[in-house]
Length: 72
Image (tube, rainbow, N blue to C red):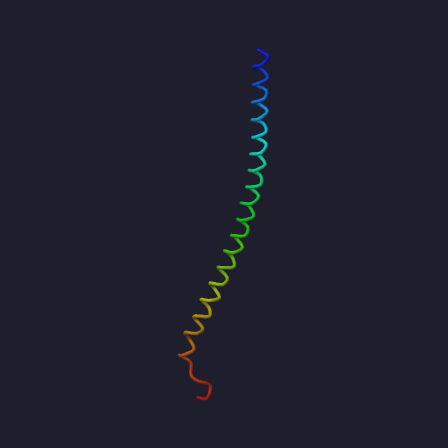
């Protein structure tokens, strides 16, 4: 009976160790995901700004042929 208790204790200890490693892994994973989300949001904002700038410049270029040259 005592041998079974030792085996149960050893199994429980191994499970607790694995759980501790999993908890640490999940914390690090969550931190990495949060950092990637911040980076993705920043890139998304930069993308929107660049897109707006390109659209603005494209409209400006389209208007140039319709203008009279300055010597007229």
